[in-house]
Structures are given as C-alpha cells and as structure tokens.
Image 1 (tube, rainbow, N blue to C red):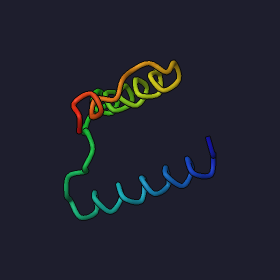
Image 2 (spheres, rainbow, N blue to C red; image 1 turned 30 degrees about the horizontal axis):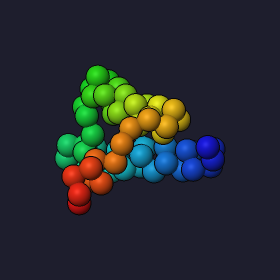
Image 3 (cartoon, rainbow, N blue to C red; image 1 turned 180 degrees about the vertical axis):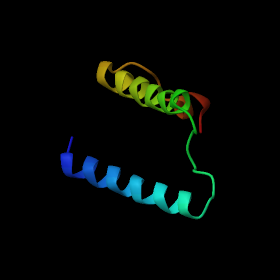
Image 4 (cartoon, helix red, strand yellow; image 1 turned 135 degrees about the vertical axis):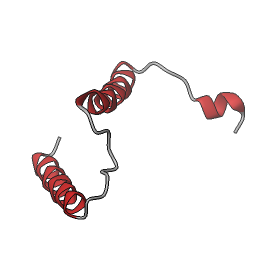
Length: 64
C-alpha cells in the first residue's frame, strides 16, 4: 500500500466533503457510521477472497 496515495485520497475526500457541505448538497456516501462500515465490510470480503484464492467467475459460468 502506498501511503502517499492514501494521504492524497484522504485529503481529496476532505476537500470534496467541504465543497458538498458548503453547497448544502447531500454527500454521495452513507450518512452514518453503519453505512461506512458496510462499505468497509464489502472491501474486506473482496480482499479475503483474493487473498485465499477462492471464488468463481460468474460471467464465465453464465457464458457471457
């Protein structure tokens, strides 16, 4: 993991949050910690499947 990318992403997120709040428009993200943790859970599940190498190609199984 590149720390510079994480810092840049965090600063960009803060800047976008400031713009959205200043314009009084809703943010395009879950408005509560539970919603954010749901997104983190999706990411963690994805990383676990990639790490342990299990899963299958759904599109290939459907013939797409």
